[in-house]
Image 1 (tube, rainbow, N blue to C red):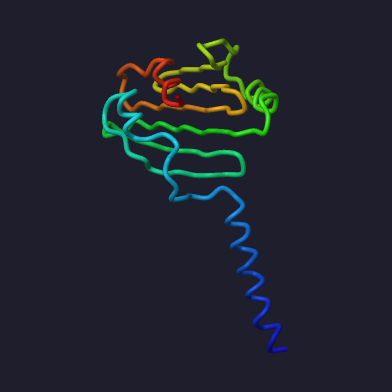
Image 2 (image 1 turned 120 degrees about the vertical axis):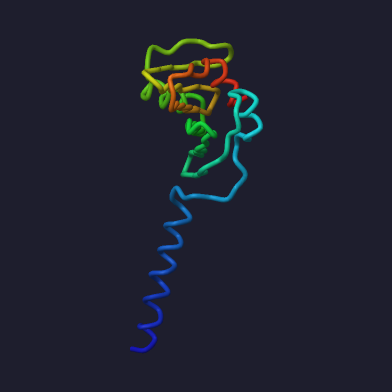
Length: 146
């Protein structure tokens, strides 16, 4: 009886740790897009607010001194056809060729989003501005993932 009282809490703790390690969690890994790269492409001084990893995705959330927010998610697939399927299932507008990438872009008001298909990876880049200043160009957003 005494053994059961010890084993059950240990099993519960092990399950919680296992679930936490296999699901999307906040991590302390190095970001996949550096703040210096974001500063160079978008101007201003950007800081990483959060960085998450999931089963096949990595998300980085940044903000600048103006309060603008940039969210970049990288989805990795085992094949280019899986990435294409995901891209076309989530398209924001009619896809178009943009250099070596296929993109789907949408802008409204102070926000813009773009899905970028690159081989077996799909990137989602979303920018939300806090003022009516101009939003970044598509090329600036695409250059973030290079």
